Length: 106
Image 1 (cartoon, helix red, strand yellow):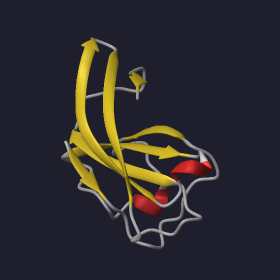
Image 2: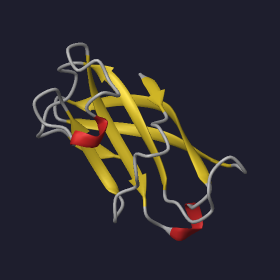
Image 3: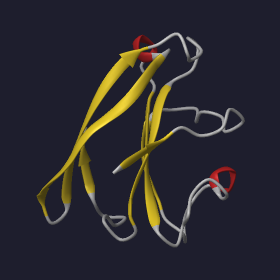
Image 4: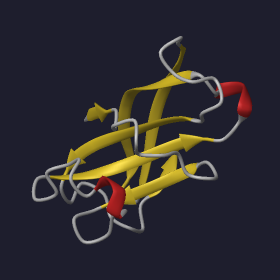
């Protein structure tokens, strides 16, 4: 599991959520950011305004069963980020670790 901070021009989405990106299915604005032959990407964004200006640090990923994953995150207040932007993180995992039916507990 590796965390990745994307370039400044990669804008936040309008709402919070969890997105699973693969080589076959990913947003065009992150096309060049990852080695899609090697990794898939779990994108987590928090829309709660109380977390604006926070950095998300992934702590662990634990399989609870074949189709459910618990992702533990730590929120860190930082002056490095804009206070009007939602907290987000891109976590790279080995290609094929998850699938589109995987359920996530954050």
